Image: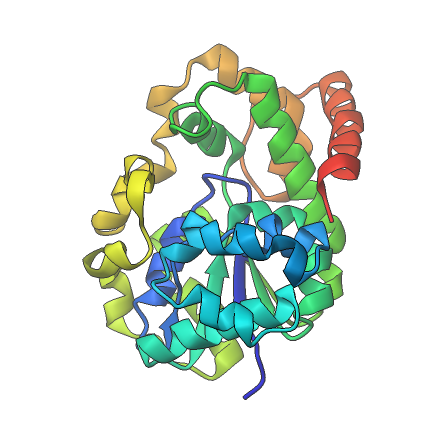
Length: 287
């Protein structure tokens, strides 16, 4: 069978975990917990012998409950190891299609295309005010200043837009707000790529959240244990002060306009500054 994984990417806190959980709840699709394999190993271009020890000690990979040493022994490269690891996980789940969710892979699009040319890439995007409001609370990102969150959003979002063409028909753009409002229609945009039908069980993703949430992740993924929460669409309005919202709008109004999000403020100067900085960001971080 052709190896055709589903990669879910997006700016962190855009709803990628929700989509992962929904797809994992399908009877034919398996998503392991986050592996970070592409960013930690493949994107570095190292040989299997160079990163063998790191792989065997990798806590993310240990969460898959597989015999990593055995998989290393029969693999000739990091790419081969990853494929075998995912195939074995899939077999254990007795499903037909495998996925890999890591928001950070939005910076590794060309790596994904190089090693997995048949992969389906699903990009989840969300109102930047909601994204940044969430990032300012999450354990892994709350200590970062506002400007870093704005820069990450602008750089990653635009890198995606500039490179999505390389996947041709193997690319799906998914709006978080529409996923909450009409999950069946949005999920079918992905399922049709594999000739699969929507299953009502996908809306009960919270019953199997333990499959994809591990360790301390629960502190920022607690909503995966609850049914769809449509109120999250406008939650940022009660959490973010007007000044912060205005700065975000002024800096990201071009992205908001392109995604049909309403905004009250814009600044060509701020937007231009962040555009310049985002190019530098991508030179340093994107593959």
